[in-house]
Length: 255
Image (cartoon, rainbow, N blue to C red; front, side, top):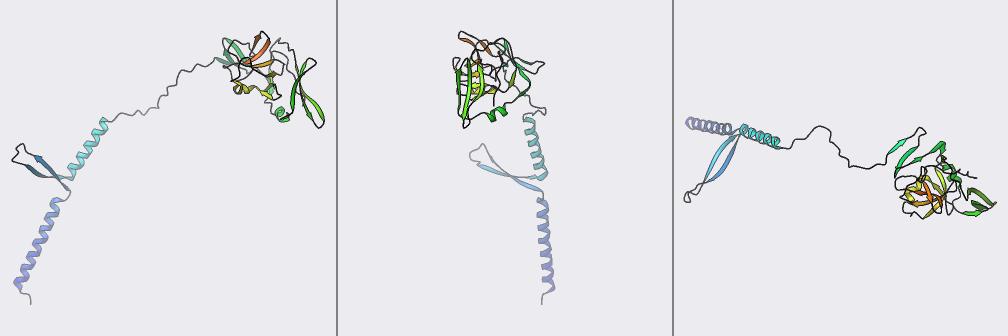
């Protein structure tokens, strides 16, 4: 049997241990131990370890203060829309006339893209035009484009061999002429011929006037000028189209 005195001593010891554990836990709750190693100036003293208890609240306040300091020293970002600086670009002066034609300045001369009312994109003609077998030749004072098929020879287009550039005529279509080999020339093909020199013959416009390569001199409103060999159209680095108008009466397709 357990004696009464031993039982009382056991209960007292157990209660003491429980109280000691509770006291230890509650005294360190919410805190952290900060360990710092300080060196004394005396060589004989050596190093002294100091243990300092820092509460959780003090640590949180220190962290907040550090974050505020970072925000304070950070660069300020503007909330307004960013400004865009564009480089200075020299653009040829342009305007739009009452007829809707685009005008570009070329060495002081206005070259106008003059499209006739109801002008077409030329797709109908392009679809009906033969892909191969077209020849361009001079016959009895005219330049003729012909095509030979199973039904025989067919004349597709007759161009004046000696056109008379007497006035401005609007463009009836995006197709403005033929190459030397009989392919169609679109007015927007100017970019494709930018490598052609001023004496390179590209083809013939529908009014019979020859079209030559890149020329940096002064042209008239249609994009042509008087050359010693005769009036001609030329390409220009200042405009995205080949000619602005016809200086002679344009021919019609026979398809």
